[in-house]
Length: 419
Ligand SMILES: [Mg+2]
Image 1 (cartoon, rainbow, N blue to C red):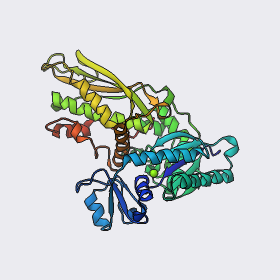
Image 2: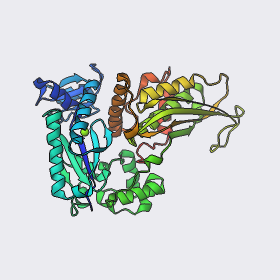
Image 3: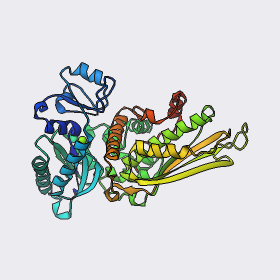
C-alpha cells in the first residue's frame, strides 16, 4: 500500500502556544480557558496538565481538583492564528500542505518519489525541525503517514506527544487493531453504538466488515463503500468538490409547534449543520431557512409532507464556518417571518454556496476568526462529550430553553457522518 499522505497534528496546540509565548510556564501544567471564570471549562491542556488527568472539555473546578498547581490562561485567539500561519509556512517549506483540516492539523500529499518509508521518515523529521525553527521549540507535533488521509491521521494519533508513525505495508491493518473503533475520525460515541448493534465491537471487526454493514450503519450506500475502501487503504476520492449544500429539516413534535419551539429547533438544526460544515472542511457563503405551517390548525398533516402554507428566506455573507455568525444570519432571517397564528409544522435550513476550505478566503475580520476558532474548540468538546454539551446559549433568544432541550433528543443525529 503506497504511503500517499503525511498528516501533521500539533500537540496540545493552544497550551503549547501559551508556553511558547511565556517561558515561565514551560514544563508546567497549563490549561487554556475561554474566559477567566469559575464556571468555565478547559479548551486545551498542556501535556504536564494531561498527566494529572486534565482534559479538553473538563470543568475548571474539576481540573483544579485533579491538578491543584494548574495554571490557567485565557485563550488568545489572535496568537493562535499567528502561530497557525507560521506552522503552515514551516510545513510548506518542506512539503506543500494539501488540506488545512483545522487550526492545528493539516494533510500533505506525498508524490510518488517521496513514498518510500525511509524517505517519509526524513520528510517528517524535516517538518518537525522546520516547525521548531520557524514557530518555536515548544511547538511539538505528531505526524502520521498512511495510504489515505484517514489512516494517516490515525497514525498521527498513535504516538503523542512528538510522535511519528509510518504505516508500512505490513503494519496495516494489524497496527490499528489495538485502537478502539472510536479512533477512526468520523466514528464518535453514537456511530460506535450503531456499529456495536451490527456486531462490530473491535477495530479488527471494523476492518473486516463488509460494505453492506457500513452502508447500514451510516445509512448510505456511498458512505458504506467509502468506509469499506478506506479501511483497506484505498485513497477514496472526496466527493466534496461536488457538494453544494449542507442542511437539515425536522418535523416538529406536537409540543414544539409554537413560535418559540420552532425557533429553538431551527437553532439546533443550524448548530448541527454548521458543525457538519466544519467537519467536511467547507465554508458557506449563504443560508436559507424555511418553515411550513399546518394548513388548518387542528388538522393532522401527513408526517412526510410539508404543510400547505410555507415561508422561506435566504441571505448571503462572506464565506464563513463559525456557529455564532451563521446563527446571527439565521436569527435575522427569522425576524422577518410572517406574523399570525399559523401553527409551524416543519423547520428546515440549508447552508449554500459551499466552498472547500482551501479555496475560501477566511474572513479578515478578527472577531470572525475568533468565532471560527471557538467553534472548532466547541466541536472538539462536543465530539468527546456528546453533541449537545456546548452551545451558544445566549444566541437562542429564548426565554424558556426547556422545550428546546426536549427537541435536541428528538432530532436524529447525523453529526458523526463523514461525507
Ligand atoms: Mg492537535
